Image (cartoon, rainbow, N blue to C red; front, side):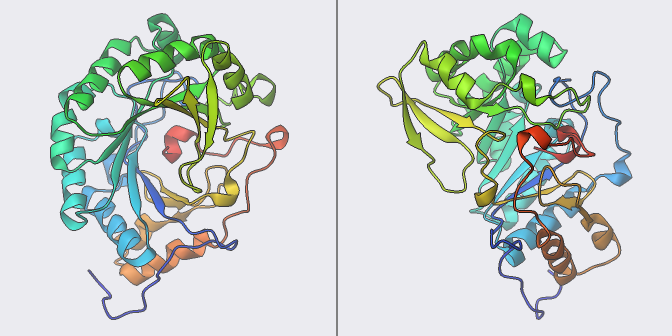
Length: 336
């Protein structure tokens, strides 16, 4: 790597002393689904290939993040990262350079059935799969695609590899709240770790409204009508999910109250979009173009210093729910 004699930036910290340990890199903003809380019905515009980070650029940024900035785990996101035909190659390249690094993938599961074994063989160590309901009609209405059987096939395939834990992410929306306990039982039966997430104003069509928000309290009340829940807290101070034991255990369910129980004070994430723009906060439009630094021939010190500079400007937290505004980019364009 370049700049081996130069000053190393040991940690990536913001102006409030929070240290970023979790890097999320989006590989594309294309997606195979059109979930209403994320994508417009027609999808986001496909980015020309030259605008996307290449496999080599992704790996270079991971190198800088881990070796210069103290990043401890990396997650590949989108859009839908399975759209990238070179996904296995990207994973293998990162794994070859960082043998112990926790390397995760967030996916909607469509197409996973055919690639699960190769992804794990390449070096994938963790996976989160988005699944909001196990009711086929409700799934098709929410995702605007009738692909639930494909998602379930992908879940079955990744379970067969032995990778674990397999986590399921479910966004809370009014249409699926009554089926939350069915999803929970479905996940428990398969040994999957389920996490419910409050919907955020990151939908491309900007239909999110605070008065229709399904809150963590709403969810817990609904689940509590069917199962006994015992609060367990967080298994890590930086983790967004509060855990609850289901009945007598050992199964648990996680609840991420991103809107009503803000965890901004312990946020440890930094994000890079598919076009190489580092974004310290989901709800802030403050970004910096690392791709430009890369393609201008910047060395590792230049990348680390630019990354630190934008991180230092990170705000203390997002506005209260009643005042929160949609950022310019939707979740699909930022990367989960």
